[in-house]
Image (tube, rainbow, N blue to C red; front, side, top):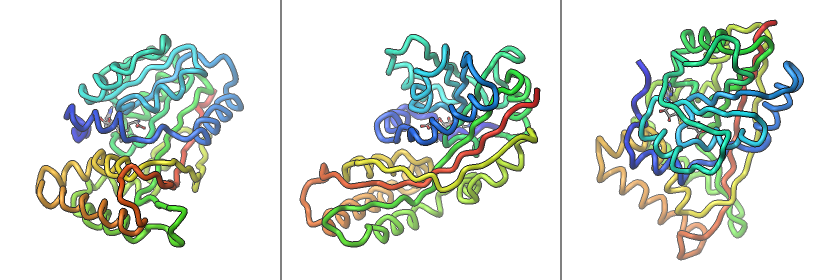
Length: 271
Ligand SMILES: C[S@@+](CC[C@H](N)C(=O)[O-])C[C@H]1O[C@@H](n2cnc3c(N)ncnc32)[C@H](O)[C@@H]1O
């Protein structure tokens, strides 16, 4: 059964506000791979587990059409609210039942989503809908992330680690797939032509408030909040206070650098 941890409207709104757009490094890697394996034209891209559409809109300038699919109605609603791009649309749907014609899709992507899928069923669908030499790109990034502030000699690692220690009991077992950097996902890709790219660093300038919002958007923080709302709130407040103190500032709008490490699996359907 599909994961139902992203259903609530409030959670979807957090996604829209506090998730990083996938880095240009990954987008370029995927586009270069597609160019190398299949070549132009780039007709249709399908972004599965699109959430609020950050990963979907990111592909818009490069394809004739991009469709975002998600099992969560709240996420699809949030994505549709963004509007503004004529070649992008969103649909409610399952990774395991992709409603596209056989051999009609150039690229299937999933950003921070494939660990939730039934990979066997998903791969059957990917195989069916991709054009010959069409490509699959599955990427994700690791947590904990690193925070750096220019006036602090050391990264603010310990504060972040403490937060993730508090979240650990609320992680779904699917998170283990991310911690294993998608080893199982890679093994489950049935196309013989496949490769992986690890340790793709990317940075964002963000405020302390944004970091707090990002943590709130994590599915395991949402589980923590449901099971023990007081403790969940207190853990975030503690983190915020510790960051302010370590950075020697009084405003949570102070900017700092967030460093993440991504990995990306790429595969191409046989001819
Ligand atoms: C962590 S979010 C990623 C959102 C977006 N791709 C991004 O990069 O910001 C994972 C999304 O996958 C969706 N999802 C989980 N299992 C799914 C499935 N079996 N079929 C379709 N979507 C699924 C969830 O509803 C959620 O919106």
